[in-house]
Each structure stands twice: as C-alpha cells, then as structure tokens.
Amino acid sequence: AQTVTQSQPEMSVQEAETVTLSCTYDTSESDYYLFWYKQPPSRQMILVIRQEAYKQQNATENRFSVNFQKAAKSFSLKISDSQLGDAAMYFCAYVGTGANNLFFGTGTRLTVIP
Amino acid sequence: NAGVTQTPKFQVLKTGQSMTLQCAQDMNHEYMSWYRQDPGMGLRLIHYSVGAGITDQGEVPNGYNVSRSTTEDFPLRLLSAAPSQTSVYFCASRGTSELETQYFGPGTRLLVL
Picture 1 (tube, rainbow over the protein chains, first blue to last red):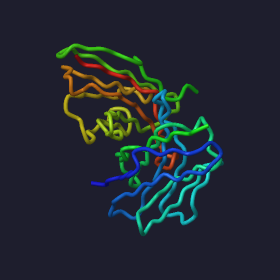
Picture 2: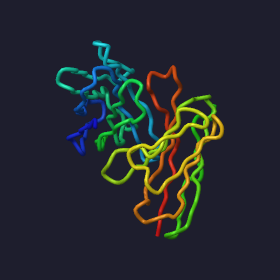
Picture 3: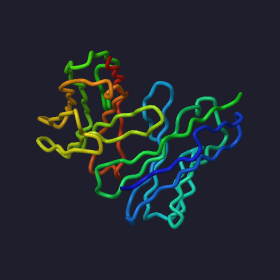
C-alpha cells in the first residue's frame, strides 16, 4: 500500500516569512496525483494545491508553491509571506490515477507568530 | 452551490446504538466517499461509491454500512456503535473531470460513550 510521511509534527513561522513543509511518499506507480490540504480549527478540509505526477513543472497557487521531486518521491509545500490565517494543520495526500483511496500523511501543525 | 454538506455536526451515542450520518452534494459528482480522522492520524477511507447503486469498501470498513440510491446522497450507517468509532467523519466527492481532486464536507464529530 502507498504510504505518505510527514516528518514534521509541528512547525512555526514568523508572520511575513517563508516556511517549507515536508512530505515524502512511497509508491510503485508512475501516474498519480499529490495534494496539500489545509485544516483550520473549523476542521474543514480545504484544498491548497495539486500536482500531477506527469507534469515536471511545480504547481503554484498564489503564495503557495510545491517542490515536486518525482525520483526522490518528495513533495514539499512552500508558503511565502506567511499570514496569521495560514495557521492550521496541513496534510499531504496521494492518490493513484483512477484509484479510489486518497492516502494521507499524519499532518503538520503550522503556527504563525505575529 | 452548497458543495458537500454533512449532518449532524456533532453527535453523542451510547455503545450499541445505531445512527446514520448524512452526506449530500449538489455538484453532480459521480464519486463519493467517507473518511474518518483520528487524533495523530490522517484521514482513512471507510467506504466509497463510484455512482448510484455502486459501493465498495475502503481501508477501514468494519462496523459501517453505506448505500447510494441517488447521485446526490451517500449516507453512512453505524449499526451498533462502539467507543472505537469515536472520531471525526468526513464525506467527500469528486467529479470525473476533477483530476482526482476530492472536495470535503465540514465533518461530523461523533462521540460514542
């Protein structure tokens, strides 16, 4: 089975600074998708960014960008110009193309310091 | 669009009681699923459906039943609640053109005493 590992249970960042959250995954598949979801205290799971494995270009959504290293099976999230509203749990997730199970990591709790 | 909605938001059950967690989506998505989230863990798939009348088991299906009579609704049934089913439950949906992206409901927090 696929596994997703987030080795940083907690991270903190000063407001307006940049922080990078790490994620590694294990798979034998060549075609898949990777996601970062944000979970604020409201518990709502909010999609932050998506990366298709067949695309070499790293995905970017405003202040959020990823560093996707397919050979290393690494998928880190960079948050630039951190804002207080970025404080949340962040989950990395993997799904094989056409598969039904979205595999999640255990999450990283991000604190933003004013 | 309301997106994915779930009811109730919070529920307390006694061991052995049954209940149904409701999930509905108004995006005409074919795929719907149920996940549970436990402390210190990511979400784990319970059951999923790829269309009306079609359901299948996920990673942790024991103690749960599902059915899919319409495209919009995908209820999750606990037949005899156990304390181990204390968790937060999320429903999600995905359309065929969504590049495998699942959209989640707000969650239902369930406490089994």
